[in-house]
Length: 103
Image 1 (cartoon, rainbow, N blue to C red):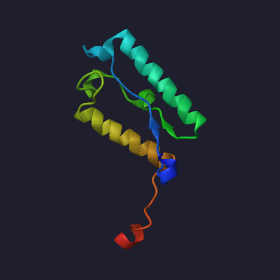
Image 2: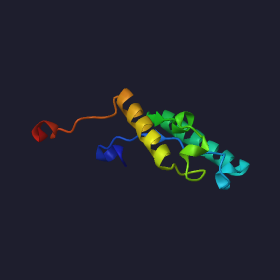
Image 3: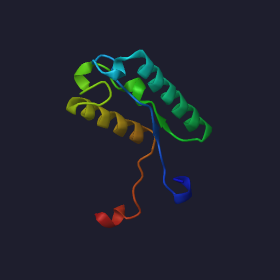
Image 4: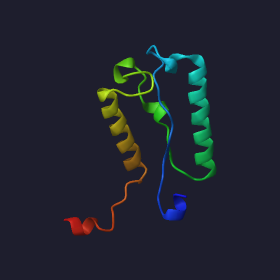
């Protein structure tokens, strides 16, 4: 649907912290997170979709997490920087045709 409408997309793996006392710390949820990430990686590769492996680069130290699956303010700052770096380094940020008019 996105391609049919000229929209670019990026797949992103799920990151979590196993160090907080919630369901993200349980083995069966962690297995599910890993399985979901594997599906994302496969679908991205099969369809030539950029994949940001967020799980591989987001620190899982509990100081960055509000709970095992949601970043806190400090984690959100890191997340934003990591996403921006990935998009920039992979040439995925494009100027809009109207950008020249905005000057």
